[in-house]
Length: 23
Image (cartoon, rainbow, N blue to C red):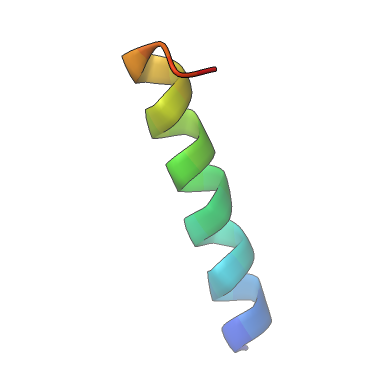
């Protein structure tokens, strides 16, 4: 499922952004 993988990637990017203080 590419959609599922895409969602996971999106969540991962959001988490990394929040970690860097971009949230």
